Image 1 (tube, rainbow, N blue to C red):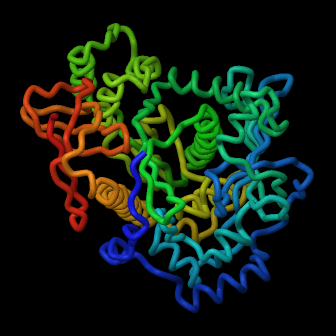
Image 2: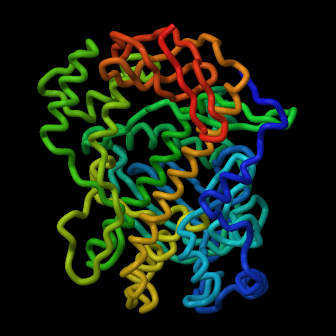
Image 3: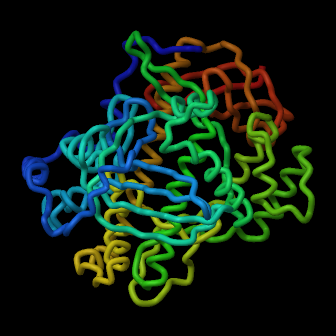
Length: 468
């Protein structure tokens, strides 16, 4: 695996380019410190759920822990106890923290440290569901039938205590060894049932290779393909289940904010079928997009190329707020149903407001006025922060690609052609994991080729290849 030198790892210029804040102002920090000492009494009474053996599953080293779970098999199906960090207990409406979080929108993750939505005293401390600590949380109890279909939802404020902090690989290894933690022993079965339902709903999941940047022991950076375990997918299904339950609550109450995505146009699906045919992938006429994609082997070059093409089906995602009248679009085509963000309030602004709506509706109370007022601009703030987050992530990857490859001009690599157009293509270099442009004649999507690195511009974060 190719590594950078330890001298080539300064993301300061990139942070300056995107005007990323370096810290929080004194008023924000003071309000956060005060909230740690005295969380808002207005959050109301809390159920004591500290006897439930919650566990968290996050990337190694995470400190901003939004979610903790207990998944059980019951006589009639499954029960999910899902505790979500209660940020509203620490953020006074209209205060300095509220204003600052609205301006940021979400946490931005960079290889040398994140730009948090909330001050670390909250995001990595008093609000985080750290193991062994009693924390205020919003507790979702979700029941499903044996097939994983949602049957009931209960949401309220509670006190919880996580018992263990796991990462994906640790949980996967324990499951593979037949020795899972009791709190997640039922996760694989429910996760599989929910995946089956997702395919039947028409959900579209793209298993594109994910680039991951990690630190080198010598102080540089390593680029690799992020491993995706089955636990990743099952864990995501619990979050999706909760988000779909939240959407149902808000739609029934006719007030809320949803994550939406229009269905793909028929022409786009026809185009994808032609792409599959060109790649030599059989697609029966009666098989839906979701069913077809779920059967592909993501490790095959042709599958990688088709997944890259499928991104064209998933355009136009947004946040849709409503109060009184349902919007024309209430569903998310990638999920195959109505969905809302409520499971990551430490890291994402919209979750705090959507959660407050679900709490109020479930308790038979009026939705707080400060929440209703926020519906006017939270969607735009989230869209702006989503755009920034995507640009920062891409810039970080491009920068590390340039650092990693700077001393290998003229070197040859193995790559998969993702998209091809006349004399150029988009390729995935396999080691290090780099997505780049490549020049060459008669390039064909889905083929594995040899490529030569022809140029690297570290300042502009550009790398260029040609067919070897």
